[in-house]
Length: 329
Image 1 (cartoon, one colour):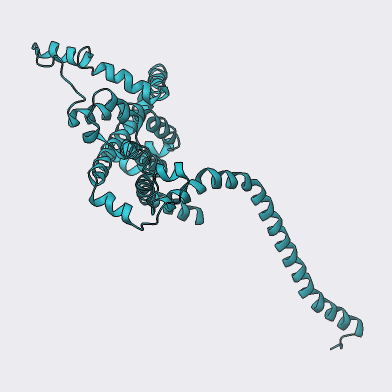
Image 2 (cartoon, one colour):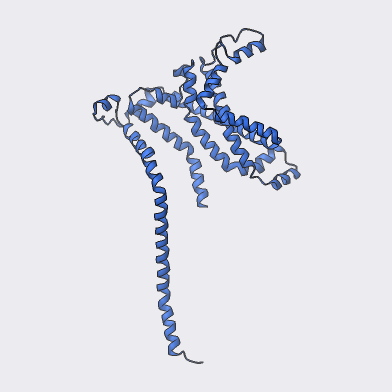
């Protein structure tokens, strides 16, 4: 066996010394690249962060702080500091006001509106997949017109349809029944019929978004999967539930969360109908209640706003958690 030469031994020692230095160099370059990427990312995000901080962060912090004070319009005019009263605004909100009833009413209305919008929106989307090109375009145009109409304009139009004296609905019901029982019938005076009209307006304008979104998602379902399920003898409902719905789950989850948030923050339609004859005390939802609650009582209204934000965060937390988990995977 030939002993190693002096040159080979020196080369081996040099390689042994250079490997750690090479590893350190690679690690340093990787850290430098990460810092460079981080600086680039923050430079792109900084304008949005600043805007969010000014437009959202500051008002949110101010609202939380004011909810623990007795801040009123008098303090604002006189330039005096309000007194810190702790949780008194929150206690009064749930014990000395109509807020619990308004909250219950708003949640019940949100559930009904969301369920109807999702149901009819998905049905319309499935129907559009079965229509010919001409009828699909016609339905799409009709949905776009309903969607593009401003909420206030839509409420005014539907208010005319349900008008007490000149409404088409009262005339049609009198014609169908052959009586005058529906003459001068005030749909907005009774809370139940008020919410019936409100539900028609909101659902009518909410269906297009769900329909278009679901129709786009249906286009991602592989045709061969549907054909295979049909060959296996699956019925229409079973095919939708077992085959199509898994492809729609993520899209419908986003749509569901958005509808919950939008329907819980509804304001324009309720306020417009109340202006046409609805009794505000019996038909207020969170948005209109906050608007009408003691003009200038900034501390009390800030407490209502904080409760609404916490409620919306709780309702949407499931979706946020699911999204974060999917991103980690």
